[in-house]
View (cartoon, helix red, strand yellow):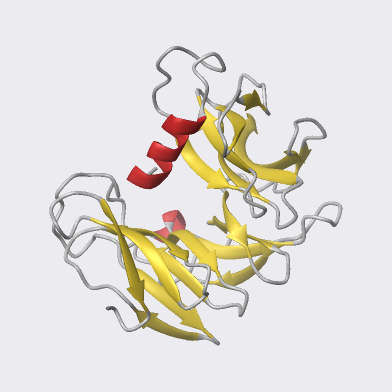
Length: 246
């Protein structure tokens, strides 16, 4: 996913849990209570204590499971899966079991996180914008109540994004998605690369303007500054910034 989470996973995962040298550990997500890390390995979801130890396999299915997101109470994990044909969102207990389907659209839904009302935020192309250049391939941001049976998605924003982070005040940091470019393509310099934005009370503010990829914004514990990944110095590294871009 990025250098800091990949390094954290490499330190935390016991070699006896997966293989001698596990590769392509992806989609790392730290539980809100700070106790465990969820990640994707070979199309299933695993968790491992942040202190290190044996990794536990949470999902076991012939379909591809990915993109784990913890619920705010750290008791459940939301994830993307193709087990019903299309890429839908499912939820299970953090220890495994009790798998339940949350979305049923025939397109692709990708979980991103939770807002401060406890609703799951995810991207989908359920209702593409008529003005969208990319037509039905453009995604929007939706929310659902995971505690309701057969929850009905509600569109939040007609904005394309790859990742987001919400602070306790409800302010949202997100990485925009301008096209089909691979965010991990090295040394790309173009108008299609990602930037970091802040959404506050319906107002959008662009926080980064580097002519390359700025990725994966995450609020710091103070809720006022943030971390993100950028290739501004020539390779993907972790940066720390305030909302004035310093």
